[in-house]
Structures are given as C-alpha cells and as structure tokens.
Image (cartoon, rainbow, N blue to C red; front, side, top):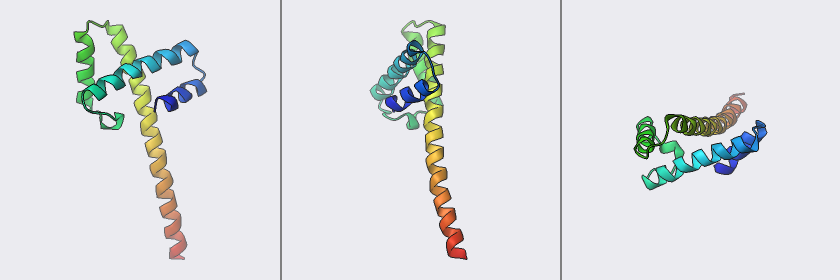
Length: 104
C-alpha cells in the first residue's frame, strides 16, 4: 500500500520532500495501527483515528504536526477507498454486461 501511495503522490507531481513527509506520516500511523492489532487501514474506525490523535497528544506532539499526520492519513484513506470502489465498479460492470447478454 505504501508503494501505491508513493506512486500516487509522485503522479500528482508533489515535491520529493512532500512525498517523503507524507510517507513518514503514514508510516507512523501504520506502525500504530499494527501495535494496536488493527493491521489494515480498511479496518480503522473514526474512533481509532481519534485514539491515534490522543496517542500523539500524549507524546507531546505539536498540533500542527498532528494535523499534518492526519492530512497524510486522510489522503491515503481516500486513495484506498477509490481503489476499492473502482474494483467494485469493474466487478459490477462485468456482471451487468453478462446479465444483458443472457437477457437477449
């Protein structure tokens, strides 16, 4: 997933320092979700995200740092959702085409 996220950011022509910053922020979050037994971004809830923010606050991270991390996570989550939706739409499109062909 990280490689996919990196490719997405590079295709959007983000500067290398921005790409690295996003990857680092997401990396921190992925380590946190793994340590908390979640393992996959798709299984993370809003409550989990709030718990992550609380964790970062307890580590005395600055509000601006936390906001940057949440921003990076949000971009990654949207990418995952987009990929999942695209895969689902492709699957449904195949089913609809089969149905129309059989219905003739």
